Image (tube, helix red, strand yellow):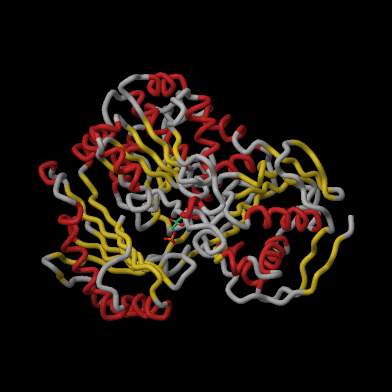
Length: 545
Ligand code: G16
């Protein structure tokens, strides 16, 4: 095998964000950009010689090109074997499952998650460790540092591998194993859920579901698992063929971008009783009942509260974790169950150490992610099957289950307002302005609500002691309400300001007050304390979820 050493110079901005490096395809396809970043990852590995790497992505535009480059660079880096998904496809949770099952050294996942794809869309890359989870901040910082001083990358000279055919081939001494992207993942899910009961539920004439794969990676997974293994009628999975540009859509399973699904569930004529969707790379989920959308924070709480109904978890749970901006609904469940609830910064990577240490069973985020110890990523189809398992055991609708949950625990009314593509300097100025105000905010009353505490969230990992600062500004109000401000770490255009709003409502008589009405005073507080219009020039958010 001939290996070329290619001279290169650093690209500015190869700093991984909340979940790996995400940039426009046009940025990634500049000569050397991808190679520099991959080499910066490999330069930070120790002991990969002869070991196994897992490789795959969500099939978005540039996935096919990047996979071939990474295969050649993996050969040059001395890996002994690469397990690569057929046609370069592996959903993010499936990649995690494959890394863990095959005891791989690590994995490279190609995805920009829910961001749009196509030649003008986004691309992304991240490194996962041997536990199957995204590399921690210490590693991603080291990768960034390396990328800023890199002078050369190494690549094997070889032809493209045919990724359409399952089986073994090689690049020099490195074996390339093209694997079925679904089978290991299906086997794992089968070990967790009551497939027999779910099959019976899906066969009931009064139960009809729709799964919207949004032209993204979960299409083949959902078809094999829901329509194949669990016997749901053909046509249950819609938009099930992964397309490099996601059919021109925005593969983010929320009420804005999965509006068709929401509308179908709201229409009695559709006969649908359960709807679900997943995102570009299959780690996010949305759960919809008949005319009823389950918020991600509530979904996490319901999942935790119903653990006794699901075979893999029925023996007991050790704890739960949520990202800081996620609503505190799951904390109330944990308190009743007598298990700890952890609050981590945004980013699934922060759950890894807690899961590895056996401290938590379930984790979740407001950004439509839920998961458990079964992998080290959030897992869209896992959440869908979990809900199906609950529905198969409780003869109630999605809405009845959530309302019953609220009656018991109270309702954490919740919403997120996103101001997208703001000028980065203005966004920084807004956050710095809030930081400066922090010492004076506690004790002040706005809109009749008293701010009890205000801080910039700082996290110390309870397992490894690592610290992460400046993870979001929190205003904690009396009665359990909260307003949180942070800048997204996944966007590729300017900055996205996220404002998270939460109000705890104990009285069931108030559970039906529309979210917008219930949160209106908090919105006014947020807009005024941060001076959003004054600093950004924006009078309304772009997306409300
Ligand atoms: C990633 C992270 C999540 C995070 C989400 C949104 O998800 O893995 O932990 O909640 O981004 O992050 P931000 O608010 O910084 O944009 P995904 O699905 O995009 O990989």
